[in-house]
Image 1 (tube, rainbow, N blue to C red):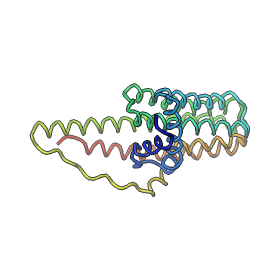
Image 2 (cartoon, one colour):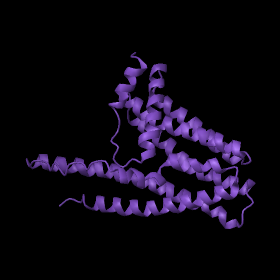
Image 3 (cartoon, helix red, strand yellow):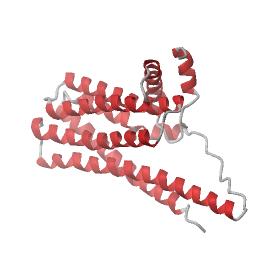
Length: 253
């Protein structure tokens, strides 16, 4: 088993592309995940075990949001646990690429944990609003439901875009091979855009977690949460339009 420094160098060489990744994930979460992946490697953990560690931190934090009266102390603890859980969520994939021990089961488990996280985070806020919040109106109880809808649809639509895109590319390659025609190499990948990385910050889960630092000030938390809900809904509309056009362009013929 190599030294931590050696493991970190290998992990840096096994990173995913930075395309479509916000500055937070690129410069905060992925490096933190790299450190955790190196520690997990030294400890002999498997990628799936790291995924479960991520789930433990995340789900414990969300349970606290739903069950404990909001305070500044709770907000700090919740944010810290969510941030650590998110870093472990990056670490499992990095560890899988480093060790070659990834597989369909690990990818499935990772997506199940992520889906549960997106459902529970907004359910926890809804429960907190109902149990502890002195809301200006009961209409505020609809806000977490709307935010949850936007988050889950974005997550599922993004996964479908990825899988359907891969299937279309595979079919095109098979057709080209059967007809003895050279496969279309397509256009070279565009360089990573820093402007895009900045623009994606409001949609990054790690940035969203920052709102829980405001749990000690219920009015400020509601306002920040509402702003993020609007922003995520606008991003959803933009993503759906973009993904639909991309998939439409993949039609055969």
